[in-house]
Image (tube, rainbow, N blue to C red; front, side, top):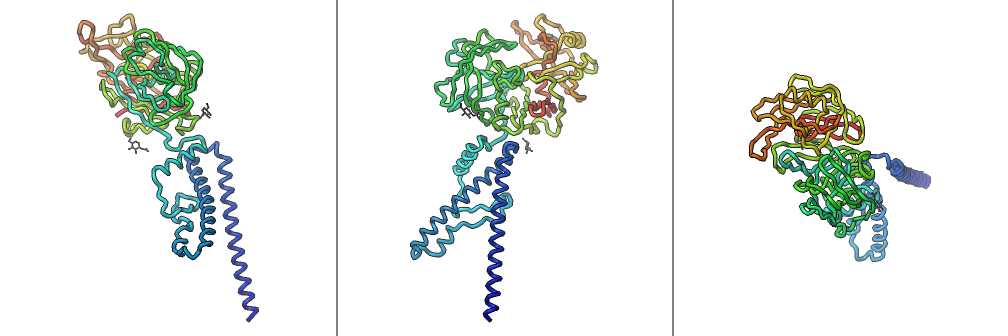
Length: 463
Ligand SMILES: *[C@@H]1O[C@H](CO)[C@@H](O)[C@H](O)[C@H]1NC(C)=O
Ligand SMILES: *[C@@H]1O[C@H](CO)[C@@H](O)[C@H](O)[C@H]1NC(C)=O
């Protein structure tokens, strides 16, 4: 009899030891997994960062809850008489079950409701820990179309946000807005940035000057938080202008220019907004895309997609054809050929995609051929005119074997002369460049993806 009891006791002891050992092993492998995660952290993408962040937060919460509960239990033990057993059970953590997306059991405080506030503070906690923002990894901004000649986007600078209308320009790489001391007429007509009203503004002393095909501005650099398409970048260097001479920017709807080219053509070698978005992991896919809508003045002028190339709202099931960036600076690529109808006007040539140019510019030889084939009347300033009744065939660019077609009626733009006559300006002009400039008319026929990560440009026809 005694012997039987001893054996029974021994079996119980063995089971308890086994169970204890297993538990310890589980705990050990769990902390190993978390350490591994930490070590590889830098190479992981944001998504797994977020997941790991949640796991770590859960672990911290576990520990805190365990500590809290131990303290509570002690307190409870001390005045046991007052507490009902049911209450005690209620405050004891229970492992969650059945939630597949959580790899570690989480101890929920019962009756704890997740509100948007707790969610936000948790996110802020994670952001602070990793210096990143898990909230969004892409954004879309609506563009407004000013008479098919200008497309603008809303952007804000500073804390609190000061809002600006910007021209998104893939043909340059700096950001500038009118500064507080600018007295030019162009500055009086537009919104100025007020550094004194921004708590995140950082002063810089370096001078800034930039010249565009259409005008120039001068000022100095500054640094502040910049938000675009719901995405926020800190420490973005931009310029505040002190003068905007001439008429170039007087009548524009935009206050400033948002350069979307590469850093190598950025004045003062300033890091671009897209670059900072990638480095600060505001976007995980280092790309942006532009789709323009025609139709003149409209608040629905298309979209600027950042960190995302889901342009199906514009392109339907049309797929992208890609071509490599041949030189980083502008968004430069090789054009395989150019046709007017079935007539070949130009063979292979270099081209840049420039959202800041409202027309298309051809190299000299191609322009001369274009004038001959269409029978338009060239002016000394590089434009070519026809009577609006003149038939113009479709024009076709060949990119990596695929056709980008601009319909003949879209090659003509109706313009009123000073005398009140209506004539038609052709969208193909000569600007003195030895490369093609593919401006807005191309972006109205195709969504274009500017892929910094893979160093390529993609085109998909807009439906
Ligand atoms: C921004 O600048 C501040 C100091 O000027 C620095 O502490 C912070 O780390 C910077 N943040 C990023 C993401 O570069
Ligand atoms: C892409 O965008 C369309 C429309 O904007 C949306 O319906 C679709 O769900 C999106 N697809 C993905 C994979 O996000």
